[in-house]
Length: 352
Ligand code: UD1
Ligand code: UDP
Image (cartoon, rainbow, N blue to C red):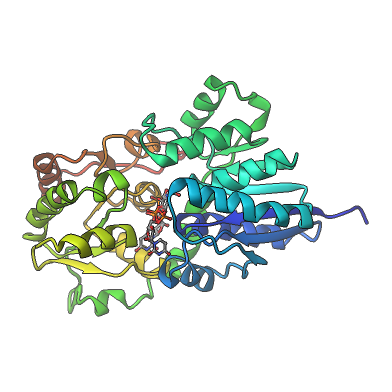
C-alpha cells in the first residue's frame, strides 16, 4: 500500500468549526488520508468551541495548543511557538487552514518556514480595509499558501492580482454552507424558539437576530452605544435576540449600556440553536463574516453593520445589504425590510 497522505488540519476560533466539520468528515472516509486535527485554543469557552465539536460530530483534536487570549502579537507568537514542535513531530505532508483568524496565519507561517505545504480554505476574500486584523491575516496567508481554495469568483481575481499562480487556485464552493445544509434539518428541531418565547400557537412570531463583535464596532463605547441605540428602534417593533460575543460582553460589562427590553441579550448560542434562529428570523443584523453567507444561503434578509465586506457575492447576488454603521441608515433599512421591501436574493452559483 502506498504511504498515506498526512494532512494536519487547524482550528482556533468559532467560525473555523463549521468550515472544518465537513472536511474532517470527508477526510476520515478516505483510508488513504491520515487526518490530524489541532486546536490552537484561541477560543476556549464551551459555547465558542466544545459545543460545536459535539453538535457537528467533529473529532476531538489530537492536540490542543491552549494558547488562550492575548494581544495580536502575543497570541500569534504563542501559536507560532507552540505549533512548531507539533509540526516537527507529526511531519505532515500538508497543513490545512481555514478562514482568516490569527490561528490561520500563525500556523501557515510556521508550516511554510518548515517547508511544509499549506492549503488555505476560503482564500482570496478581500475587504480592502487593512484596519481589519482579518484582512492582514488573509493577505499574508494567501501569500504563502500553496493551494488556494476559493468560495467565490472575485477571490480568483484578487489572488491573480496579487501574483499568485492560476494553477494554485481552485474554485471549490463553500464548506461552511455544506455544513449549514447538512445541519439545517437537525437545527429545525431545536427548542430555542420555545425557550426564548418566540413561538405561540400560530408558530414563530416576527423577530430579529443581532450579532456584533468587530473591534471597530464594539471596542469603542461610543460606537457600540450608537449602534445599540439604532437597534433599540428596531426592538421597539419586534424582539431582537442578541447572543453576545465575549469581546462585546467585556465592553458592555465595563459600561453597562441601557437598552430596549425587547433587545434581548443572551450568551452565545450553540450552532444548532443559532442556525434555527437565523432560519426563522425576519431580519438579521450583523458584523460577522460567516453570517453574511449563511443568511444568503437561507434567503433571510441581512443588514451588515460595516463599511466594507470581503464577501461581495452576498451583496451582488444574495440577501445582504451593506448598511454601514450610521444609526439613521440602519433604522431606515430595517424598517424597509420589515415593510416587505427587503433585498431579494438568490443562492450564488445557482442559475438566476
Ligand atoms: C476572533 C477573530 C475574528 C473572528 C472572531 C469570531 C482574530 C484576529 N479575530 O475575534 O476574526 O471573527 O474570533 O468569533 O483572530 N474570549 C473569551 N472566551 C473565548 C475567547 C475569547 O472570553 O473563548 C474573550 C477574551 O477576552 C479575548 C476576546 O474575547 O481577549 C477576544 O478574543 P480573540 O480571539 O482575540 O478575538 P475575537 O474578537 O474573538
Ligand atoms: N454562531 C453561532 N452562535 C452564535 C453566533 C454565531 O453558532 O451565537 C455561528 C454562525 O452561525 C457562524 C459562525 O458562528 O457559523 C460565525 O462566527 P463569528 O460570527 O463569530 O465569526 P466570523 O464569521 O465573523 O469570523
